[in-house]
Length: 113
Length: 115
Image 1 (tube, each protein chain N blue to C red):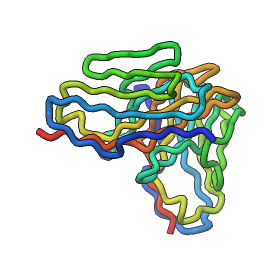
Image 2 (tube, chains in turn brown, purple; image 1 turned 120 degrees about the vertical axis):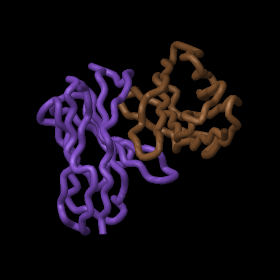
Image 3 (tube, each protein chain N blue to C red; image 1 turned 30 degrees about the vertical axis):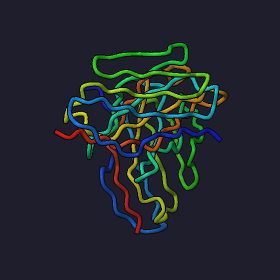
């Protein structure tokens, strides 16, 4: 069935360094890939998304890249700050006859001051 | 204020006692969805709805029911809860008319414990 694998499960970086989180999806019909950030005790919130007809998208310190051939997409955070510490989830939307969302298992990012 | 609300926020119940978690959005969104969040498993979709009277199964629908009689409401029903349904539940909605390409807005979550 459809699946999204996310790595790593935990990531610690020094403040100011970059962080990269990678996801792989199984269904080649997927065409929408959002990233959500969940702070402790809070609800998930969208931070960036990309559609299958785009290879890269940037929003200030955050960028997402998509490789449709390899079925990979990645989140890049540059110049990390303590407030970037949270759990990050990738997701893929499958539209081959259904309209499901499949989320990855999450990455706990810790930015060390 | 545009928002997704869920009630109750916390619930402790016993095995077999039927319960309903309500979800409501005031943004006129077409697409609504229920997720459960468990440690190490991320967010797993239970059911979703493309519009009024249209619902479909997500990845983990067993033991749950939903209904979409009105556009703004999407209740989650556990007819006979079991301890393995102890979890954090999120309702979400998005604008999309036909395909869910838009941002999902999540409710605050409902922490359910089934004894």
